Image 1 (tube, helix red, strand yellow):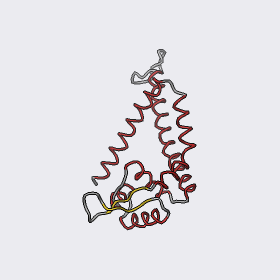
Image 2: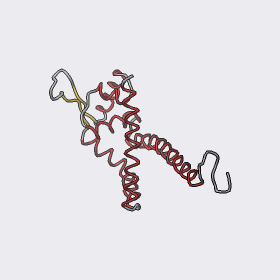
Image 3: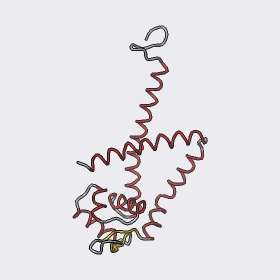
Image 4: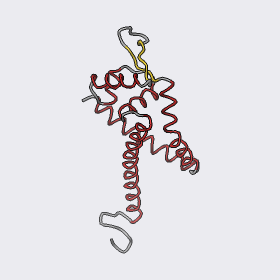
Length: 166
């Protein structure tokens, strides 16, 4: 560093502080991903399910009925494995198989009210904590967080869509 606080190449201390902050954001996002995995394992345990079963329910509850092949693709598993998963969820009363609305040859898998109630009960404490964390932020802070998370989501989706084309 020279006397003006510049590192070689013209970066200032302010630039370095910004770099650390950006690195800290990446570190936090990786920590969120790890915590999300542990959270799903915990929710699965509370619901008496396997973690992949919880992922499947999450897709069904968020996006509505899906075909078993669509579910398999989203979960990165074979059709045979997805069929076994669907059988387990159906036996537990969490999903029902229904005819596809426009193609009688196909079936879709839909979450039951039981699944919705049990999933909500399992995550209600987390949702309350999430709401409290958001309430602690100013409107401007929430705007920045939402903008950042929207970009993270877009980056994750882009990677997922690129993987779908392989």
